[in-house]
Length: 124
Image (tube, rainbow, N blue to C red; front, side, top):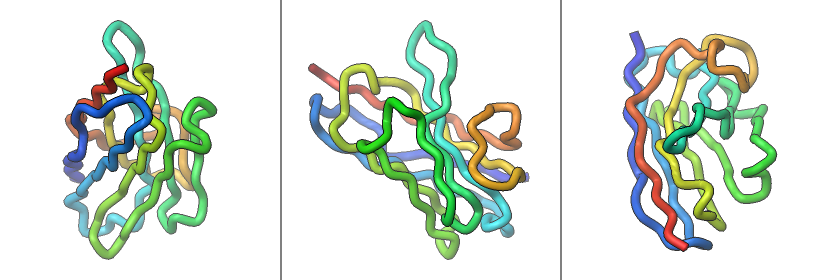
């Protein structure tokens, strides 16, 4: 069983930055690819970014390319999402997820464990 706890969300002005952190309780954290998804009110959850177990491969949704950066520290069982140049449309609950699949999957069904989410609010 893997438990994931997100933190770092909050209120930020448009153009600002936040760094989300996902702490995992997993003795074999480095076995998992990790992903970030988000869900805005009234919308379906969508893929944001993912990183392979080694950190050598990353995926990004087109709408965050060049603004968000995913990284991980396997020694700390932690994955990060650095979010820059935030826009009001980035406001959502952001979820961290762990996958046993190879690479950094974009599909929700490929993820085995999910965190509870952290709220990101962007004011215009």
